[in-house]
Image (tube, rainbow, N blue to C red; front, side, top):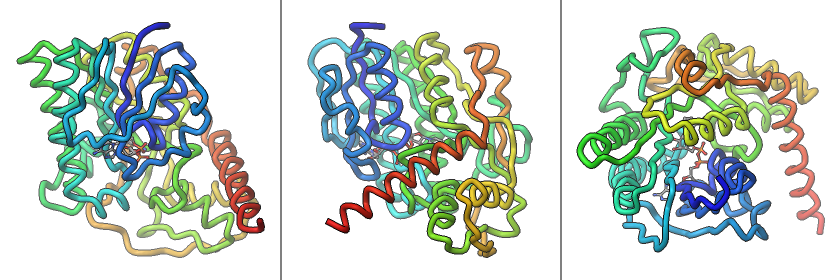
Length: 321
Ligand code: NAD
């Protein structure tokens, strides 16, 4: 796709920064638009001297004016971890509604393809396992997590309306729990929390009795799935996630083992509407994109731990200077 120009909203975040790197490597010219509310320019350090990469500090709640041709807009801008969206409830609803509308309007004006990064949270606390794309979900519209879940459901509805009413070429991917380097140690998500606690030899805080499950996809696999969706151009929604389930307690112990830590486990209260089971049916992704995750959990955990150790070492050196 050499010569094509794409916009990645939310590109300074965890997934967005890996996606920007991949798209630049694939030959795209990439414009990243991000308001840095939960993202960080440091995530894009490796692209700093890359002539095909451009960063624009921009809040997607405001209209984005871009001159020249745009081939695709990948819309990832949104707080994504519970800690962030519970801290930024109104901003989360705004970027999911007004922000998504601005991104779709830009796609309409420029004739660009539009790809929405939706989420497994649209299924809420699901009553059907595994979750296939035809399942309409079990979501509380008023619970604390609703600011994120309903914002993403609205984003999906808006995306489909722009497709039906305005003829915008749209794609929707529903991303399940993803992990990898650049997750913030205090973002509240299970993997970075257990990594931080294990490395600090602090108690591993496991919510409830830890029997609730998660399915974890390594970020490189996810980015491959998004890239395939962009190239193949299907409407979706398509689930992208790892169908292998693991209990939260087992995950805590696996992370601890990879870190070579002896942290004890501390059971804490579960948060409201925390889903008990979350596992994707990826039949559609396999069939339409020829995609499935390849990185084994053990391998992915080793990679994120290696990265976290190197960041801690650098921070230690900075403090010592
Ligand atoms: P992240 O918080 O690391 O990245 C989100 C980025 O969006 C940040 O850089 C932030 O600054 C930016 N942003 C937020 N509001 C904005 C606004 N109004 N205007 C411009 N930029 C804004 O989160 P992430 O984990 O990288 O998630 C990226 C996307 O993937 C999100 O849309 C999220 O809903 C989706 N997703 C992530 C996961 C996961 O497991 N990480 C799972 C499902 C869906």
